[in-house]
Length: 365
Ligand code: FES
Ligand SMILES: [Fe+2]
Image 1 (tube, helix red, strand yellow):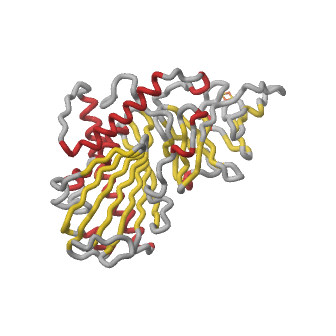
Image 2 (tube, helix red, strand yellow):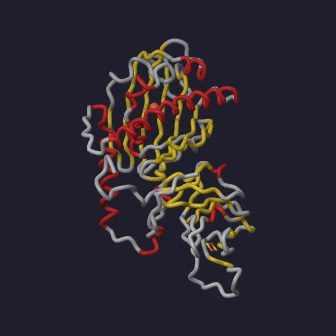
Image 3 (spheres, helix red, strand yellow):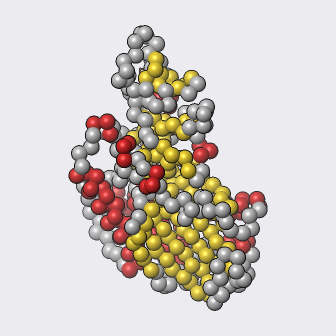
């Protein structure tokens, strides 16, 4: 699957966003992650549960069944599963074989996000979570607004690369967050042990109407943008805006404000992707500014969605398309390498039987 080699589809051993905390409740919600349909709900004790959305009896989707307390009863013949995926009742007989059940995926709820581990369950380690503070989800200086989720019909790597090459904001988002000075400003790319960073500073950048409305910036500013990628699926765009030449930091004279936009990218299928997003900021934390920001970034991300879906169609038309790269692609190319290496390493380790799950081309609902 472009831009990766044959057989390299997804990094499996890593935390992906399954949903915002508010997505999990009494109702059964189905989403497809890495080609595997998953049913999501929250128990009465508040625990977020993720089970294979396929009854072990005859493969009917459990999401079409009903909640019975903390269990899920299949809507076809009534096999019932608890929050660990164990079958606890078969209506047509007394005996329930102990081995009957469906796969339960490890989950962790942190920073207002339910994270899911689609790979080898024993490898699920909290230490592998992305840095929630950097993402702006747990930084006490920031007010967080959850934007929700977009489902785009394009392969996930197009989003990873969109977020790692922000020279596109000068063209795709001119007038909202883009200004004519972005693409020509130099970018410094750094590969950290578990993260890739691309940083650019634009000196004397012109504040757009968005910056003026959101932070009251009138005139010019020095704008530093840090794009961080925590593989396999978490990005943040951090934007620091200060008075020109002031070099100000949080709380200092000349400090206008900062944004941290979290972009949590979870592959659904080979050509469909979930894009969970939030926006955090350090000032103007009132509800009207929140509504303005959410609206503004909904427009910005919709511009990305239209572009990436068009790019996907273009790639599907010609699978042999030979791309050309430029300097600004450095971070994106490093991210590709990192993901490809991780997938290759996973593919050389035999997967234990219980980690194998039937693939599906089913689309998310
Ligand atoms: S398919 Fe679920 S009980 Fe038969
Ligand atoms: Fe964009």
